[in-house]
Image 1 (cartoon, rainbow, N blue to C red):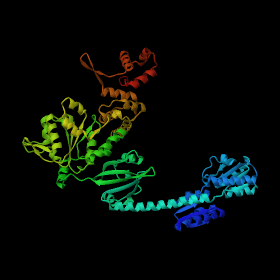
Image 2: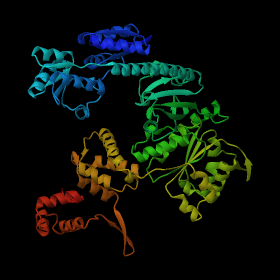
Image 3: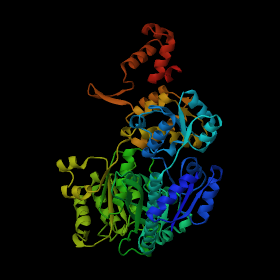
Image 4: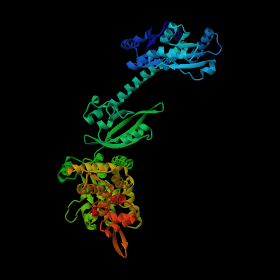
Length: 632
């Protein structure tokens, strides 16, 4: 017996259904005639009796779907069945091409296209959205001049009361057979899905890796016991929640890529309760659609030989990377691409090169890579090569052989060394670095010895190393060793969408710090978005602080921004062999400033000279930021 319930509005349709079931040799759990008012209650009772799918039609199907969670298969009238009703109407009316009005819910019909051409009649369809509209729609049809009405029980009752010709929308054996086949197919699919879920559950529980299943909305659907242990939470506390709310810092951009189908495979890294994990994701695809994804999480094996003594040394000496990917302020698409690369590189133990101008969060990114890598539990040593002489570079990185004092390379065992401004390394130190990373050879007592120190190297540079290689200032072998895992951080001027957000963050912070309430106009913000920002985030941050501290009005306008930019970062040009500061770059601004000096700030006289109004002059002074000297 199939766990199907068939609920029908008329006895004649039930008889058709009985014939189909007998012909197909199928037995269903419930087959009965019900009134519209009782359809929902009958469906709920059928569900309680074990029915898993309801077959219904028209208003009854709509009511059951709207008021229950039971799957419903509808029985729309087929084109052939409509054709039979039209032929019957023609015989009743004795008219070759009658005008027929159909008053019904749209879901009662499979398709009404081209019916007039197929069966040679004029069709008027009056769609019902509620049963209470029936009388109004029937009256409208009669007013429109239809010869006969086809509809459900209510439409036929209304037509009968006023003596107007009508026919009941009969659902024949063809519709019933089609709906029955669909219902059986759905039950088979549900049975297969249940078996599949049981297999997946077995796979989840027997896997040594952590497995998370998510749906198309990035909500967690299932987790295995390994993930429960990693998170320290049972499944019922995470299932149904968005994955980024449960696992802070996970790369949602990458997950969206596989859910959209733009990426076939996804790998990244993140941490759960201080445990670095390598994650591989793959989409779940069914019938050409992406319905979710499976994320497989592997614990990263710690660097060999690392122990509690190493961790203790790290804490005692303060060699700790405190920042992660969530500390990166920029959120532009270009920056997200960099973070995605960094997450992928974190899984590796090979050197990473981060290229970017001053103030582009290179150091934060390096710390984040360390904190998502197998070296996470080891020390993190940060060395700026540009501040050291060639001798100091060698000693700080590789130690003082004469005094047997350890250098950074030994101190960072099982951890990470960050070398900032690697382009400033001397040729000798470059050679020693190459040998240490590539050949595991270590300089000790004036000779090279084999010492396989497990150290991860990350370098940063603001210069293009290929140029230095061509100029003979950087070793070619070291360049190729460092550049395979390269991240190019774009300057702030190339991701102007970040500027507005950063300005807002800085203004909020400095307003709070200095108890001020300064806001910035749209024009002033636009001026900041158009500026070059050679110092990137660092320059923008200190500029915002200065802006808050020196603002003499509640709202900062464009002129003040441009004036302060020119004051702090003037344009320097060579003139007559000497460096000259150019305060104003716009020719009109230069002329206005000159006239203001000539007329000692008298704006009326300057306006007359320029043949403009004093109001226009005031606006131009404000725009070019040349008003502070003249009390603008």
